[in-house]
Picture 1 (cartoon, rainbow, N blue to C red):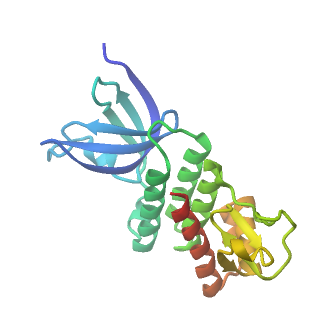
Picture 2 (picture 1 turned 45 degrees about the vertical axis):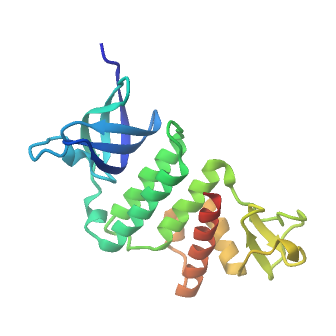
Length: 234
């Protein structure tokens, strides 16, 4: 008898596989990241295909196989249609899915990461929240922290002195900020306002962040710091 189990999962991506099947990558609540084969999903009359669209939150039945595990059935819980139909929000969702796929290994699970992913898509899907470009940055910094790379934003990562305002740098090799006197460890220079927002991103939820008045220049600086840090982690 085939072994089966059920779990909630978010579809990360899918790609053609064999003549009529697809290969689906999911991040599940109970089993973490998985590769699954979805049989017959390239057929026009497939009932399963629509539930396995990237970004969907689904109830998923997984069938263990000798060579591959299979998506036995799937039922969409939330398709996040508002976010999918908004071009900018859809792009934000795509960058979030790619980050999870790139940073998480097969079989690696973390309920906090699953909750972070679900919460981020709920925020994107909320029509009352604008297409806020800081949401992916907030997600990335939280993901980095949950993955064991939480940056030190209060003390110099080189000399360990308490950071003072002015002349501080985001150093990726040191996994945090370094002060101006540790010049040999310099990285990307960041303003005091940028540091304040980065700290809030780790300490507050996104509902708090969207109340802040952040101008375009500061928003670009924040995203540049986090994206560069993300690229240097993987």
